[in-house]
Picture 1 (cartoon, chains in turn blue, orange):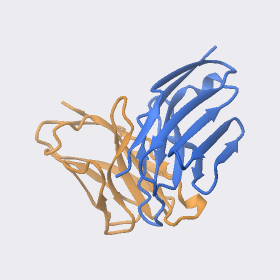
Picture 2: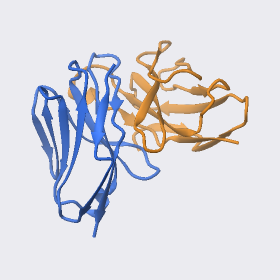
Picture 3: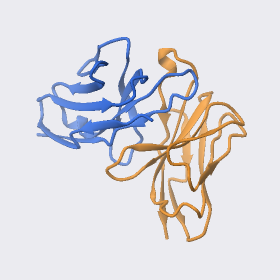
Length: 114
Length: 116
């Protein structure tokens, strides 16, 4: 089955700096890679996703890059703000039209310091 | 809040007791999922269902059971066979298909289960 590794487990940045979180996956059949943000005690919410037919996707201050050859993908947050503080999870899935089972990484606790 | 309702928010289980967590969605989504979240770990898939009256085991199904009698409902029972049930349980749903908008899983607010 799929295995997703995520690094770092904790990340502390100064407000306004950039943050980068990296994930690797094992199953070459995986073709969908979402990123979720989870604030303390809240539900995970999708912030950005990418399919394997593109190498990069950007949405305002958030971007995701994908390297299929190396089987890794990364989340980039620019101009970080205190409200970006949360746990971020990467995930991988093979879109089959049916199951779309997500395999999650173990999460990165991002802290944006003033 | 995404139209996925989980109840109760907090639940306590006694030794040897079965408990059922509720998940209801009004999004007309076809597929539904149950995940377990432990501190410092990612979400792990317990069970999922793509259509009514059908469901499949996820990675950690032992000690759990589900049913899918209605499209909008996917209850999870934590049985007495689950020896370490203390965790945060999340339900999710999505439309079926491979079009971009159908990939997204939307989550409920979760149920926190503890053992007395």
